[in-house]
Image 1 (cartoon, one colour):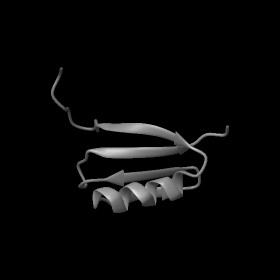
Image 2 (image 1 turned 180 degrees about the vertical axis):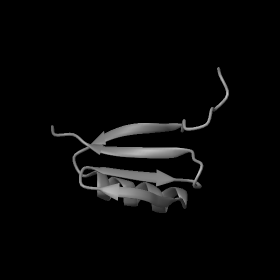
Image 3 (image 1 turned 30 degrees about the vertical axis):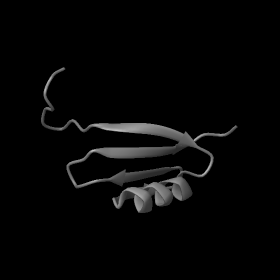
Image 4 (image 1 turned 90 degrees about the vertical axis):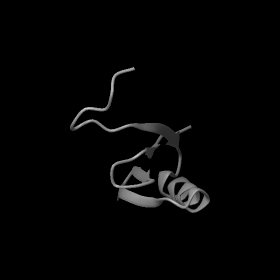
Length: 60
């Protein structure tokens, strides 16, 4: 596996019908913070440099 390079970030994307609610749940569970939120996308981060969980809206 290559090492992380400048401008790249590591994370996992999860599809959810309500990404904001799921993001808040995991932020509380993991004691991480909401790094970014916009309609349809919530990013939960352990630190400003990652790792990250990205929750994206997906319909059934």
